[in-house]
Length: 363
Image 1 (tube, rainbow, N blue to C red):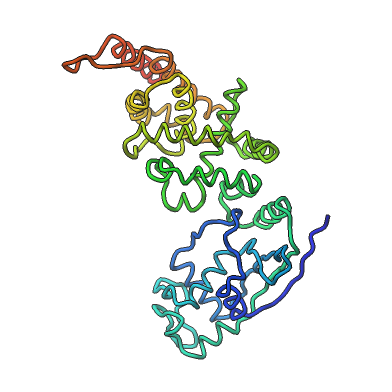
Image 2: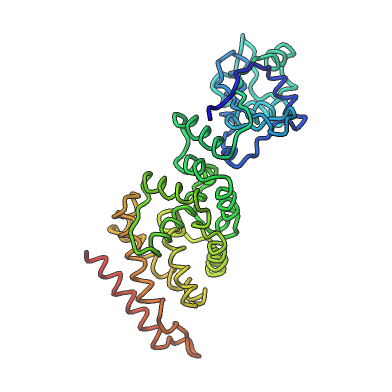
């Protein structure tokens, strides 16, 4: 069925009135997190004052038949404009154009601006494209295709094709304590959903491993997996993923430098195997904390970390799982006798790990 929509023009005052009265919903899962900094927000307000054209805001009418709307695209613009009119931030000194007709408006809140500038902002007309009520699938398709030419990150585009149910499940996993406190992802990376992306990559890797095949993390492979996941959300195995995060959160007392994007999907897969083998989480930590600092210093391993090609992904996985199988899985667990001396099992594990790493270094 063809999409039905209309083009409308409304003032900034109309936008703010609807926002203040709760008639604009910017919280739908498909939307990006708030990622604009003070300079970006201030540049948008400057555009309103100067009269620079602004891209249309994409809305969807409520299916309830009332006069409320969901913001499909344009969340950053809507929130920036409404927050400024609401007095929530000052215009930044770092903005690109801080003056209009010899009036300096940097470092000012809305209420501090001259009345004529306030009126100019509130009377500025914006373009809106208002869609009739959409299904989840239509909304995802619209968002994905609308943003193809925009600078969305791979993770943001990946989310758009998952379906609402799966998107909500993965989003809940990103809020787990391990993901928020112990995974090394920057704040800008989190705003671009890199934590979300890593959980999807783990699910891809686990599915391929269970099926006895190889996978990389290229765009084609990710898109194919997400299509499958949308058809069958149970492929995510969200409940099991939550159990793995609980296990690994107990294993790691604090954030470690090596718990980062290049290693995280493999660490989660190894943790799943360790749980199945009833490996204590303390033993898992000891194994990981011996292996990964050595790998980070190994140029051959680090070379494999530079791409999402299948060969490189599988190369990393092979090294990690060979170590886990030699030192952790199906082995007598390393313990210490009174007095701090390691048992034969621990010495055997240490020797196996040294051999594994020496082999890698010699390749």
